[in-house]
Amino acid sequence: MTTADMTSSARGGSSAELWRGVTSCAPVLFGTIPYALVLGAQAAQKGLSVVEVPLMTGLNFAGGSEFAAIQLWTSPPHILLIVAITFLVNSRHLLMGAALAPFLRELPRRKVFPALFLMCDESWALGLADARRRFEAGIFPAFSLRYYLGAALAMYVTWVVFTTTGALLGPLLGDVQA
Image (cartoon, rainbow, N blue to C red; front, side):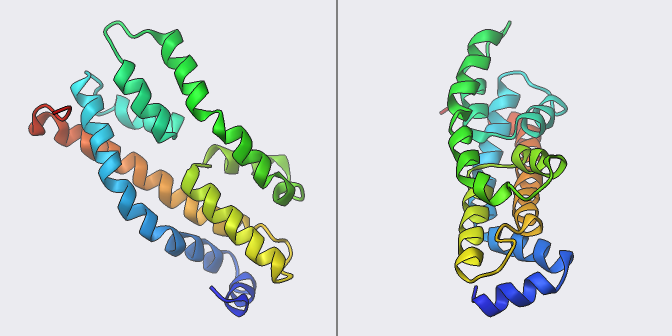
């Protein structure tokens, strides 16, 4: 995207920025869908219901730790081990948040915390790259919360919908581990 595109998009209002985020995220979304389907199918085969899968993926929203948790899932589950592994896998988010911090300083916390909840590797990379481009182009604020939310919400919805779809299809597929 050119500087002129970013400037005109920034002037175009919230829907233009949201749409810019969604469209920039689209190629990544298509690559995410197979992983979401596999996670949902694995979760269903470990005994999670079609209601529990979107609850897990929607409340945690961190694919790597969700795959780890499903691999560790037993009956009864070893909750402390799953929590510890989830923390270790997700600890990278501390560094990712620190990289975004200079661009988020101007935002009120009531907007920052929901944005950070929606942060995944893909939305972080897109948001940071966009903020750097805008900063170098002299566009302020450099961090477009609406652009970021467009990308992050697209990732979130895609992840939850397709893990749920995987949970629905999982029992039909047989052993997905094989």
